Length: 494
Image 1: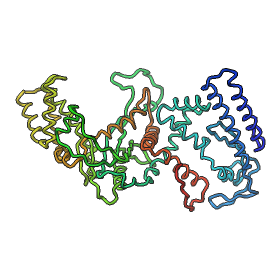
Image 2: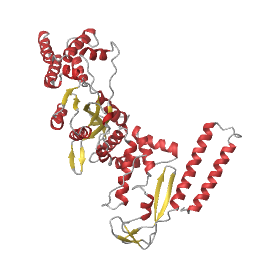
Image 3: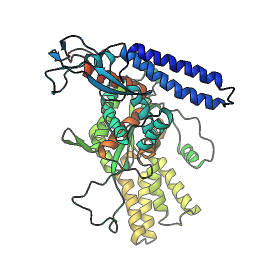
Image 4: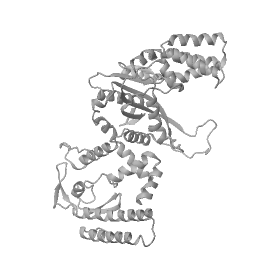
């Protein structure tokens, strides 16, 4: 039913009277405070819907005469019948009746003045409902987000509509990321640190051609396949000079480490390999392009020392050479530590003190800059002990790994200069950005859905959600209702 403003106000007044009566009666009925609170909230939602209806009714149906000029500059005739539109607000759905303009009935509507006057979104969901819905879905499954909306607001959007919403909203994330203001110089550290890593995302299996004859998996067939999401982080930090002893004490907890400087304005990002505008888009290359742009944004004058921290994956270093080759590349010490443990178990029992002593001694040598000595020592030990089979192969892999990356293992110089040598920020980004949402029990993703969620979660984790939401609304409103040659008036986020 389409109500006039006066009808909506009368309904709101009745609801307000009922609300007051509920509160007056609550003490006599022995209601607990939380029961009164819940009853008030339910009634306030109904009151809010009536008042929102009154606001819409105040604008009429948008009839501006027999013709109307659209943002494209063309004049269109009023169509004979009004057109209803559903608007889904946080208070509930309401129907908006509008005068529509176009070429003729049965053809696509060209212009609806009331939509522009009210600033309606492109789809049915209000901007506020989109905001709240996605906040739920950023943390848990879409079905859980739907359940939360139903429990709190009595709304029942479909899971598919929430998935579609996330993809549509995420399309604005890259442009927003490029438009962010530069952090104030007074809040930045002297060092700019860039890190990158990969994290697998469980993917949906594509539908098989024809009926599947074997409902059970074949021997060796995995339940799901994963596709790599390349995750990066950028932050600035103050130099923190220390020695090999300091690092060992911190790793083994012999004594409390000195106060560390904290990362400033950490920015995380993730890219997956996908098809964009019909062309293959390499996720790893896309991530490094983003990191290079972030470097330019954070240090346009080139005065900062830029440190890049990666593990030993050759493909990462190939991209580093192309995009960031003039920076200081450092091999993550924690990945080196994992290789030292592999080598230790070639000679000593797992969990033994001898294995721990083996690792500690060689880690100290690496931190003191004696990389070549460690490499040659490992190979000599393998020959001396006559290693064969899997242990010989493991030791060779470790020695080759260290030799291949020795140019990025000048830890004595890095520590003296106060550079970070561990990529814990990238590891944390992989966990918070990818694992905590995309690897929840039973989850499977399409590439498009996973990339949308990664972009949205990155925006949220970067603390940019409110600014992004305001930016996206402004861009959508401009595209819907402003002449294309008119410069947008960008408002600040509340």
